[in-house]
Image (cartoon, each protein chain N blue to C red):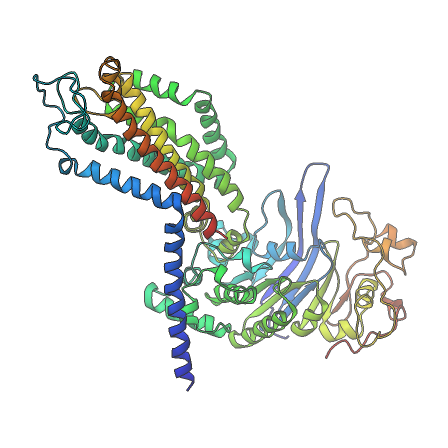
Length: 295
Length: 336
């Protein structure tokens, strides 16, 4: 009798669990920003990984026959001054730009969070050193600092990454440090110490998961910033070198022909804007979701 | 009580150095012993050093707090002399602690299971063995359907359940001594009663000792074998529970007992203790209770009384221990 009741109860609890899991998925999907941002980024990812599905043209092959052809069924976005298909170039550029956004975010996210964690948790000298170094970097505007680092290192995709990595970690470090300062005074951190846990376990198992969510949300908007900065560098001729397609350099190439061939600048610009909006929406949705979960 | 005590604290001083002008004397000259299997209580008003004493025992005091002197002997070993690493091994395994606010003392982003199994250092097979052990612990602390509840997060538990889960996680490594820092303050009365009974049962079952910190004399009466009344960072009176409630020998204890409703003083007006506790950063040389003591004489303002043993096991800190008996009528009938 009791075991029967018990079983029934267990069954109920399992059911509740399933409902709860479905609920959190539904909450996430019901959030319009999260959903639309997610869909945009999924589409962008598909374009980035399988560009050959979308176009038969070679993005770098020059055809002397038809330069500056306006958009038509043959060339969806028209052709550029060398007769290259703009649609193909925009499509093939997606991979590089997505890579720029993601890779140049992940490294500062990890490094910055780690340094912020150490600075916030240990305080004293470690905090002093990290924060003063950070203050120095903060004194320079972001773009100016990136440009000067690239100027020192030389042009190229790799050097854009390095420049953004060197500058980008400060925001994450500040965010995480502030959260750690709040979390480390919590009673559950003291409870963890009472349980005889060492610093490493307390930092990574107890402090980090409670301190990381603002940094995660910031990472989505930082990805947009990185993408725009990298495109800006290419636009200025400091980043990706022609003929490799990249949205920023496409814009730059189209600039000289903007009077006769508007399609050369418009379409890469739209793609860039849409990807940026996708990241921002995802970030917004993530904020709502994390707030709802943290209740 | 012929056995050597499990924990023996001798002349413990813990001060907060806020600045050179301002030193908060949170714990001064505290000595007591806790024997195996007993519950020892600390009672007193807010800010009288109960929790500070408790935290000193686990060396959880952070700067500007500092343990100045004294000995904390656990099974004969002075834990103030342990290295930080040895201290880390000591915490949780020998001496553990439960907190006042179960909501804030459980990590909100970890499942209950992980919070319990993380401390089970002695089990090799984390996955199955630790899980079974944790389920068994939760069942012992009275959580229904532990197999399922163990997968949940703290916010899915009610306050009483959270306190039970916290007790379970503190008891996981089988400590010899459990510090309970106001374990029932954040809970409503019916749950308080359950938690008190639970701690009492677990103490007997696991043969551990408990140090209870509370300002609730009712809780003390239900749980403690012996207790110390603290005031301004010092122990004022220390004896077994029955004696303390029936034959107290310190004016502060009288005042405390007189300020709570009991069957004995039914129909009479309660007598509050007038005034406020002294500022611990700025203590006068005399007895700290003097400004609020109705029996105070001039000597009380000049000289701090020593704590004296007036009967075996009954200690009190007052200049007028000989006269103390006549100070106030016997307060009786508090205990059930």
